[in-house]
Length: 396
Image 1 (cartoon, rainbow, N blue to C red):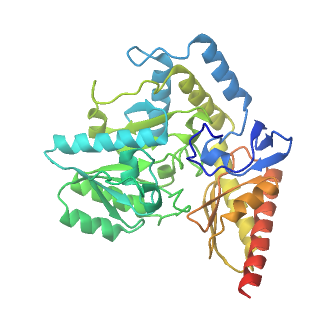
Image 2 (tube, rainbow, N blue to C red):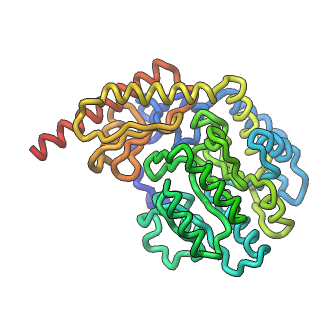
């Protein structure tokens, strides 16, 4: 690994193949994937319809450039805009790039309204990517440290705090947009009040701002709807997607509607690989599998079942603060740092994540069976119970 930049704290396991909700390492050991590559492989590993779509398209044409018409891209754009009730799409390769496009839309929108230094309201504990713009928008000092000076043009407020947004609205005439996650993923599966997005929509409508929703982690059925905001009443002006959109094949998308859809014009933005035929074929197949198998309803039911089962098993466990979810975004929040659980889970043939230091994050695939869900629940609950006993004994 010495020729690979040490940008990741990698675990000492290498995977050679996957099938459905399972992965096998190079030694033949099997693991239940409760993380999905961080909400990416929502249809599981090596899904036959996704693999077939990728192989067929790769055999015809992989790349021709956005200098020309791309039929596969146009088909995917129509499909996404229909599902999301949006007007148009810019395709790219990742969530960070999709959010970068959204930020550029907001700034151009502001300039065209005569705002010389347009500003975007963003949230504490948020995560929008690692490019300089998305890093500056992110509300996590740990990932920003060392990359100063950050870009200006962002006003930060607490998540799920409408009054804080109102205060900025009253005092900052340069604000042109709000960028927010419907559920904060990296921040710890933070689920806002049911009326939060509606209140932000109302503020944006009153002020002439854009409401921009980062659905990179919450989109593609993970919360029980195509996109998390569809669980409520409010529609965004800009929405970003990636992660589960290609079920592992890199693709991102920035969708816009209304005035926001008219901002980017030829020459104002671009991407060499964005929306290439293979990525679009993978995304189209992903959308079809989700729809054909009613996986939106499945995600909603399965997420609640897993959450309720965890609550039952962990009800009397010391140090467990809360078990919460939005569809198949499931969190177990503890009262202390618990990063060591990730390695312990690997040892037990289970892949999980710890985020925000104290939150066990589960992002299992939408195709998880009831039996596999029970294995996941039992495994996670067992790890947390053992962790709690050790922590209690240590403080003794």
